Image 1 (cartoon, rainbow, N blue to C red):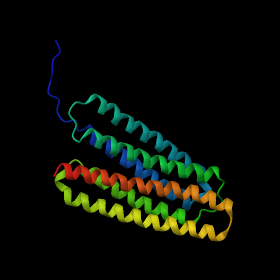
Image 2: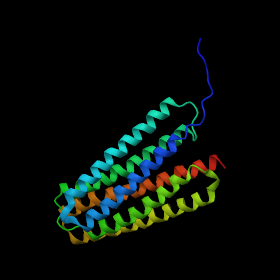
Image 3: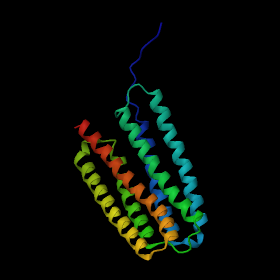
Image 4: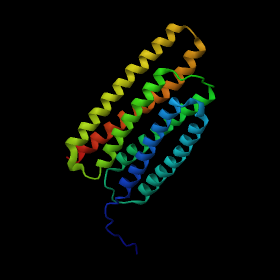
Length: 208
């Protein structure tokens, strides 16, 4: 005979989210350092790679826990969405760092520095929201931070467009391809932060 038991909400998910958010912020901060101290680019690339591996481990724990948990603190699709977006942000940061080394960049483009700095600010905002998920009664504060994340992403869009415009004007096809690939990864990370904020806003609405 199969026994059924009432399984309480598993709060481990919030801890996993917080771990992944801390890793995301650390990766963004390391990318910014990489661009400001490019003579040690390979050192920072390795650090980001290590952080990405740690992030993968945390996300794996989320998915494993989700598959084994009957009653979750948030809807399963929201848990998957939050975990996947955190993972994607870290992956995009790693992709940017890998390309900076692979393409043998000598001097970082100013737009890459500006976007990296913006990503640090945005990732910190995301981290604040992630840590607030334990208490959804803070819905007004959560939404305020989500709005700020959207504003920062829009600022990133502007930097990205202006950078591409400058590169087109310079007429160097190789430089255009190289830097488009690099800044696009950072812009993708910013876009994903906005997507994550949208998921969290929907969580707030569901639990209002």
